[in-house]
Length: 219
Image (cartoon, rainbow, N blue to C red; front, side, top):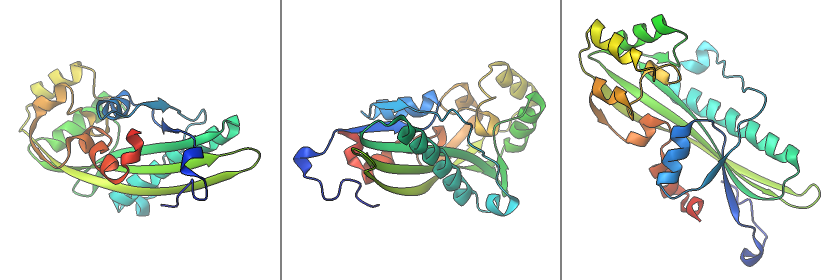
Protein backbone atom coordinates (compact mmCIF):
# COMPACT_ATOMS: atom_id res chain seq x y z
CA UNK A 1 0.00 0.00 0.00
CA UNK A 2 1.19 3.47 -0.82
CA UNK A 3 1.98 5.59 2.22
CA UNK A 4 -0.69 8.28 2.19
CA UNK A 5 1.38 10.46 4.51
CA UNK A 6 4.72 10.15 2.75
CA UNK A 7 6.76 13.32 2.85
CA UNK A 8 4.98 14.63 5.91
CA UNK A 9 6.69 15.02 9.24
CA UNK A 10 5.34 12.43 11.66
CA UNK A 11 4.82 15.08 14.33
CA UNK A 12 2.69 17.10 11.88
CA UNK A 13 0.59 14.19 10.67
CA UNK A 14 -3.09 14.52 11.61
CA UNK A 15 -4.75 11.90 13.74
CA UNK A 16 -6.18 9.14 11.58
CA UNK A 17 -9.94 8.65 11.54
CA UNK A 18 -11.27 5.16 10.83
CA UNK A 19 -14.30 5.22 8.54
CA UNK A 20 -16.46 2.14 8.00
CA UNK A 21 -18.21 2.10 4.63
CA UNK A 22 -20.95 -0.20 5.91
CA UNK A 23 -24.21 0.15 7.82
CA UNK A 24 -23.65 -3.28 9.39
CA UNK A 25 -23.78 -3.00 13.19
CA UNK A 26 -21.93 -6.31 13.35
CA UNK A 27 -18.88 -4.92 11.54
CA UNK A 28 -18.84 -1.80 13.67
CA UNK A 29 -19.07 -3.92 16.83
CA UNK A 30 -16.22 -6.18 15.70
CA UNK A 31 -14.03 -3.11 15.30
CA UNK A 32 -15.14 -1.69 18.66
CA UNK A 33 -14.45 -5.00 20.41
CA UNK A 34 -10.90 -4.84 19.01
CA UNK A 35 -10.41 -1.31 20.31
CA UNK A 36 -11.03 0.52 17.03
CA UNK A 37 -13.42 3.44 17.11
CA UNK A 38 -14.97 3.87 13.68
CA UNK A 39 -17.47 6.28 12.23
CA UNK A 40 -19.95 4.95 9.71
CA UNK A 41 -20.19 6.50 6.27
CA UNK A 42 -22.61 4.80 3.89
CA UNK A 43 -22.75 6.50 0.48
CA UNK A 44 -26.09 8.18 -0.20
CA UNK A 45 -26.15 6.57 -3.64
CA UNK A 46 -26.46 2.80 -3.36
CA UNK A 47 -23.45 0.90 -4.67
CA UNK A 48 -24.21 -1.31 -7.65
CA UNK A 49 -23.47 -4.83 -6.40
CA UNK A 50 -24.34 -6.58 -9.66
CA UNK A 51 -21.63 -8.94 -10.88
CA UNK A 52 -21.33 -10.87 -14.10
CA UNK A 53 -21.23 -14.70 -14.12
CA UNK A 54 -17.52 -14.49 -14.99
CA UNK A 55 -16.86 -12.31 -11.94
CA UNK A 56 -18.89 -14.60 -9.67
CA UNK A 57 -16.94 -17.62 -10.94
CA UNK A 58 -14.12 -16.66 -8.54
CA UNK A 59 -15.98 -15.72 -5.32
CA UNK A 60 -12.92 -14.37 -3.49
CA UNK A 61 -12.22 -11.95 -6.33
CA UNK A 62 -15.90 -11.01 -6.47
CA UNK A 63 -15.95 -10.24 -2.74
CA UNK A 64 -12.81 -8.12 -3.13
CA UNK A 65 -14.31 -6.24 -6.06
CA UNK A 66 -17.46 -5.38 -4.11
CA UNK A 67 -15.43 -4.35 -1.06
CA UNK A 68 -13.42 -2.01 -3.30
CA UNK A 69 -16.60 -0.55 -4.78
CA UNK A 70 -18.05 0.16 -1.33
CA UNK A 71 -14.87 1.69 0.06
CA UNK A 72 -14.27 3.69 -3.12
CA UNK A 73 -17.80 5.13 -3.03
CA UNK A 74 -17.30 6.18 0.60
CA UNK A 75 -13.99 7.83 -0.30
CA UNK A 76 -15.68 9.83 -3.06
CA UNK A 77 -18.42 10.94 -0.67
CA UNK A 78 -15.83 11.89 1.94
CA UNK A 79 -13.90 13.96 -0.60
CA UNK A 80 -17.12 15.71 -1.63
CA UNK A 81 -17.60 17.03 1.91
CA UNK A 82 -14.34 18.99 1.76
CA UNK A 83 -13.30 17.55 5.12
CA UNK A 84 -9.54 17.53 5.71
CA UNK A 85 -7.43 15.02 7.60
CA UNK A 86 -6.16 11.45 7.46
CA UNK A 87 -8.69 8.67 6.99
CA UNK A 88 -8.64 4.88 6.87
CA UNK A 89 -11.75 3.85 4.94
CA UNK A 90 -12.82 0.21 5.25
CA UNK A 91 -15.16 -1.51 2.81
CA UNK A 92 -16.23 -5.14 3.16
CA UNK A 93 -18.40 -7.73 1.46
CA UNK A 94 -19.28 -11.22 2.67
CA UNK A 95 -20.30 -14.16 0.51
CA UNK A 96 -21.47 -17.67 1.36
CA UNK A 97 -20.35 -20.21 -1.24
CA UNK A 98 -21.33 -23.87 -1.66
CA UNK A 99 -20.42 -25.97 -4.69
CA UNK A 100 -19.51 -22.84 -6.65
CA UNK A 101 -22.93 -21.26 -5.97
CA UNK A 102 -22.90 -17.88 -4.24
CA UNK A 103 -25.59 -17.41 -1.61
CA UNK A 104 -26.31 -13.72 -1.08
CA UNK A 105 -28.98 -12.16 1.09
CA UNK A 106 -32.30 -13.96 0.60
CA UNK A 107 -34.86 -12.19 -1.56
CA UNK A 108 -37.81 -13.48 0.46
CA UNK A 109 -38.89 -16.21 2.89
CA UNK A 110 -38.91 -18.96 0.29
CA UNK A 111 -35.43 -18.03 -0.85
CA UNK A 112 -34.20 -18.15 2.76
CA UNK A 113 -35.75 -21.61 3.21
CA UNK A 114 -34.09 -22.81 0.02
CA UNK A 115 -30.68 -21.60 1.16
CA UNK A 116 -30.90 -23.23 4.58
CA UNK A 117 -32.10 -26.51 3.07
CA UNK A 118 -29.15 -26.52 0.67
CA UNK A 119 -26.68 -25.71 3.44
CA UNK A 120 -28.12 -28.37 5.78
CA UNK A 121 -25.67 -31.15 6.57
CA UNK A 122 -22.99 -29.68 4.33
CA UNK A 123 -19.82 -27.63 4.54
CA UNK A 124 -19.69 -24.25 2.84
CA UNK A 125 -17.22 -21.39 2.60
CA UNK A 126 -17.72 -17.91 3.99
CA UNK A 127 -15.53 -15.36 2.21
CA UNK A 128 -15.16 -11.77 3.32
CA UNK A 129 -13.43 -9.30 1.05
CA UNK A 130 -11.89 -6.24 2.69
CA UNK A 131 -10.66 -3.07 1.02
CA UNK A 132 -8.70 -0.56 3.12
CA UNK A 133 -8.14 2.89 1.61
CA UNK A 134 -5.69 5.30 3.25
CA UNK A 135 -6.62 8.87 2.42
CA UNK A 136 -4.88 12.13 3.29
CA UNK A 137 -6.75 15.31 2.42
CA UNK A 138 -4.94 18.62 2.83
CA UNK A 139 -5.70 22.18 1.88
CA UNK A 140 -6.83 22.97 -1.62
CA UNK A 141 -6.58 20.01 -3.97
CA UNK A 142 -3.91 18.16 -1.99
CA UNK A 143 -4.99 14.49 -1.83
CA UNK A 144 -2.91 11.36 -1.31
CA UNK A 145 -4.50 7.96 -1.68
CA UNK A 146 -3.44 4.33 -1.48
CA UNK A 147 -5.37 1.13 -0.97
CA UNK A 148 -5.06 -2.61 -0.55
CA UNK A 149 -7.69 -5.32 -0.84
CA UNK A 150 -7.68 -8.89 0.44
CA UNK A 151 -10.10 -11.75 1.05
CA UNK A 152 -10.27 -14.13 3.99
CA UNK A 153 -12.16 -17.44 4.05
CA UNK A 154 -13.54 -19.77 6.71
CA UNK A 155 -15.40 -23.08 6.43
CA UNK A 156 -18.73 -23.70 8.15
CA UNK A 157 -20.45 -27.09 8.53
CA UNK A 158 -24.18 -27.15 9.25
CA UNK A 159 -26.01 -29.77 11.24
CA UNK A 160 -28.63 -31.85 9.45
CA UNK A 161 -31.69 -29.63 9.72
CA UNK A 162 -35.34 -30.63 9.59
CA UNK A 163 -37.90 -28.44 7.88
CA UNK A 164 -39.37 -27.65 11.29
CA UNK A 165 -35.98 -26.45 12.56
CA UNK A 166 -35.56 -24.25 9.49
CA UNK A 167 -39.03 -22.73 9.91
CA UNK A 168 -38.41 -22.14 13.62
CA UNK A 169 -35.12 -20.39 12.88
CA UNK A 170 -36.67 -18.20 10.20
CA UNK A 171 -39.30 -17.08 12.70
CA UNK A 172 -36.51 -15.44 14.69
CA UNK A 173 -36.17 -12.86 11.93
CA UNK A 174 -32.39 -12.59 11.69
CA UNK A 175 -32.02 -14.17 8.24
CA UNK A 176 -33.03 -11.49 5.83
CA UNK A 177 -30.03 -9.19 5.82
CA UNK A 178 -27.47 -12.00 6.05
CA UNK A 179 -25.62 -13.78 3.27
CA UNK A 180 -26.67 -17.43 3.35
CA UNK A 181 -29.74 -16.53 5.47
CA UNK A 182 -28.12 -17.13 8.85
CA UNK A 183 -26.14 -15.31 11.53
CA UNK A 184 -23.52 -17.39 13.33
CA UNK A 185 -23.17 -14.69 15.99
CA UNK A 186 -26.89 -14.94 16.78
CA UNK A 187 -29.44 -17.72 16.99
CA UNK A 188 -27.90 -19.16 13.83
CA UNK A 189 -25.11 -20.65 15.92
CA UNK A 190 -27.55 -23.45 16.76
CA UNK A 191 -27.53 -24.48 13.09
CA UNK A 192 -23.76 -24.88 13.01
CA UNK A 193 -21.97 -28.12 13.84
CA UNK A 194 -18.47 -26.65 13.53
CA UNK A 195 -16.38 -24.08 11.74
CA UNK A 196 -12.75 -23.76 10.71
CA UNK A 197 -10.99 -20.45 10.34
CA UNK A 198 -11.69 -17.03 11.82
CA UNK A 199 -15.09 -16.40 13.38
CA UNK A 200 -14.90 -12.70 12.60
CA UNK A 201 -14.57 -13.54 8.90
CA UNK A 202 -17.85 -15.45 9.11
CA UNK A 203 -19.54 -12.61 10.97
CA UNK A 204 -18.46 -10.14 8.30
CA UNK A 205 -15.08 -8.52 8.94
CA UNK A 206 -11.74 -10.30 9.59
CA UNK A 207 -10.63 -7.74 12.15
CA UNK A 208 -7.85 -9.87 13.64
CA UNK A 209 -6.12 -10.16 10.27
CA UNK A 210 -6.82 -6.52 9.46
CA UNK A 211 -5.18 -5.32 12.67
CA UNK A 212 -2.27 -7.72 12.34
CA UNK A 213 -1.47 -6.18 8.97
CA UNK A 214 -2.41 -2.61 9.95
CA UNK A 215 -1.94 -2.14 13.71
CA UNK A 216 -2.01 1.64 13.24
CA UNK A 217 -5.80 1.40 12.94
CA UNK A 218 -5.88 1.11 16.73
CA UNK A 219 -4.14 4.46 17.23
